[in-house]
Amino acid sequence: MSEELHYFNEDAQEQLQMMESALLDAMDKGVNDEYIGTIFRAMHTIKGVAGMFSFEKIISFTHIAENLMDAVRNSKIVLDEELLMLLLRCKDHVASLVESAVTSTSLGVQSRMKIQNSKNLSTPILAHLRKREKTQRQHKRSKSK
Picture 1 (spheres, one colour):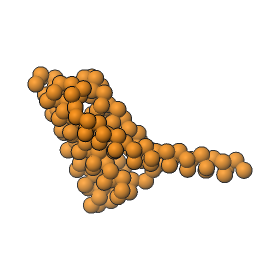
Picture 2: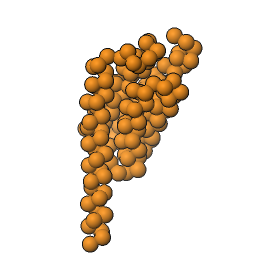
Picture 3: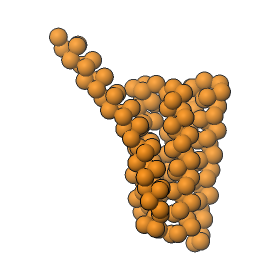
Picture 4: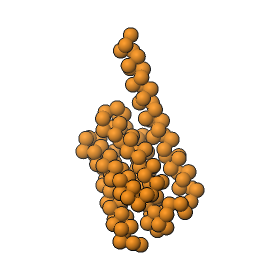
């Protein structure tokens, strides 16, 4: 493993650990802005650093999770237990993508199962984001009447 990949892996593992701690604390103690910010920043940081290596599968998946957390951060979606569990699964999936990236130096060799898992996890995230957009449109229509 190159020195650069070593640092990418080290940073990603640190971000994933902070994300997991924030998710577990939010489940145990209740959601607060600090936990929300930590989760958002972890996804954002991993996405940014993965971009330096052109790890497209990591970039595209973390971008979707980051969008969800941005909506939570801006009080457009409530971070409930269902979303916390989904985000824990996302964290595990990102860890798997990172492992593939650093061990094979190319996510092009990653298994179909990991690609399918990205799709399976993206679907409920996108559903939450679409639901929020639909609610916002309905709210705007009712205000204009």
